[in-house]
Length: 282
Length: 113
Image (cartoon, rainbow over all chains, first blue to last red; front, top):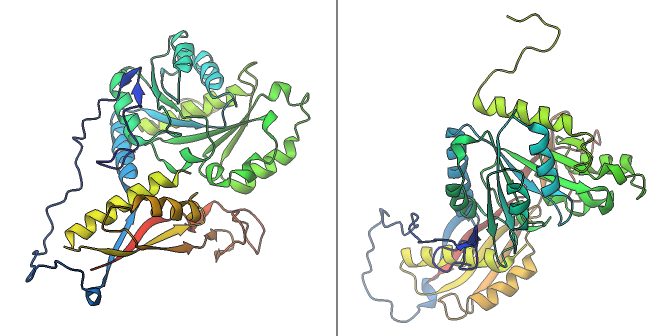
């Protein structure tokens, strides 16, 4: 934890292997623009117990991250980017899902990735091998990504040449839930090997999902996955989420995801959706 | 959730505010924590005890106001408090996505002198 400004970027966080150049120059809330005069008629050198007073504060603890996230959001919007925050347990298949998405989209949408892990740049290597512009954040011990880390990482990626920016969060279903990164869409993955009650066990995370992807459907039968139970549980916690059932490995179910992305991107850029098939062109 | 980080943030806000108020001691911090915030109050207590040492909040008490979850069913036009973390409407039993209250994680007030 950074002692100066309370953010979680400490020396151990690295962007593409380089220590984060965290120069603490962001606007600090040393707000000396307070209007009230500091009249201290006499010096309080010892505590006067009788002078106790209650001071209302009413400030959100994560206000700083939320503010930075909104700043990110504004920047992404100006660039016409569709931004995803992809979350799951470790091993659910986030990177494979992103790899398959890139392969499946082909020329339809240009994708860049910010990948977050505690250690290694293995995910970035995999994605770069497919020609995806990727920045790797290694957090050291920090268990989630924060808006500030994303703001630093995006400086290293050619956003003007992209349509979609995917942020692959640290594999963790607990902490990342509370940190807005400035994304448009929160995608939470769970795989068929994790149990149908996963959404019930992690309601705080699943509730924030706009898309829930059930991955590894190619082995669902082999592991005795109860599809009805899983869908029921997802709907219980995230009643309005779009649910996709896919296999990142085989590609099954992914077509719907590509369509979803294209539609969302059109919306972000303010383009009207194309006429539905069957109607004559205007 | 990493309550140490949360408490460090909270304490930072408190110390700054106390300084602005010209206060020399913080006697109590009151936080409002919603049941959907993901934060564990007991872990906050532990972090509080450790982090306040050596500051003007040393020896202060931490008050936690638990904010209940309030959901809204748009079909029934009904606001309700679920017994659990799921917003199932008591009337139509359809889960609702609309949360009106329960995500709070804030420093509500300080008692200073």
